[in-house]
Each structure stands twice: as structure tokens, then as C-alpha cells.
Amino acid sequence: MAFTDEEIAQYGDSAAAFCQRRIPVPTQDGPWMGFRIEGQSIILLEFRPHWQNKSLLVQSPIAKTTFVRRTDEWRIYRMRADLKWHGYAPCPAVASFEEFLEEVDRDEYCCFFG
Image 1 (tube, rainbow, N blue to C red):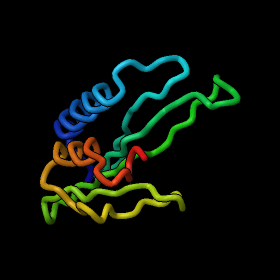
Image 2 (image 1 turned 120 degrees about the vertical axis):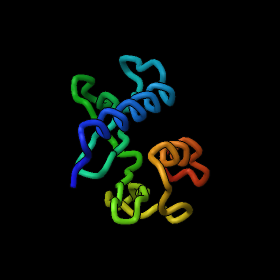
Image 3 (image 1 turned 30 degrees about the vertical axis):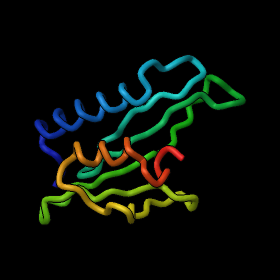
Image 4 (image 1 turned 180 degrees about the vertical axis):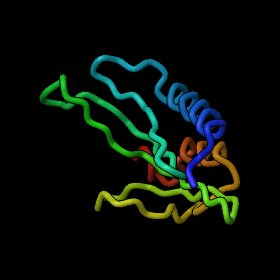
């Protein structure tokens, strides 16, 4: 089941605030962050102009969380070199979306921001 409209608004506000805090002032050539909501998942993304053609936009996934209603937990995923989502082994799940954002922000093992 997808998120309700209220949940989309709540999580969207939290994700937008996180992205703004993480990269506060996007420049013309610099990166900026955004997010996408797909069903029960929220994906954090980095956007930047293509290095050869500034009119093209490149997006790179940073982190993904999926809410599992049955267990009432947020599972955390990271993108690996094979371009597939893998469970984040140091902390596979958290209790809230805010805890997910804190874990990504901490990036203790350099899995999200390198």
C-alpha cells in the first residue's frame, strides 16, 4: 500500500529540509539534493550538471528507505557499484523516517556520500 497524502506531505517536508540542510545553496555547477517517493519507498538523490554538457542533468541515488507496515520499520538501502540496492548492513532498519535521515547524515561507514 502506498503512502497516504498526509504521510507524503510529512515525509516530503522532512526530506526537503534534510536536502536543504545537507547542500544548502545549489550553484549552477555544483550538486544539489532532492528526493523521490515511489510507493512505500523514499529515495534520496544527488543532482548535478553533466560534466561535458551542462544542459544535461545527472542524478545519482544516495540512499533509499522502504517502510514495512507489517513490522512498522524503515529498511535502509544503499546503492553499490553494481547499481543495485543492497541492505545497509551496519543498520538494516530503524523505527522512524527521521532516524533514517540521521543515519544517512551520519554516514559513519561512508556508504552514502563516499
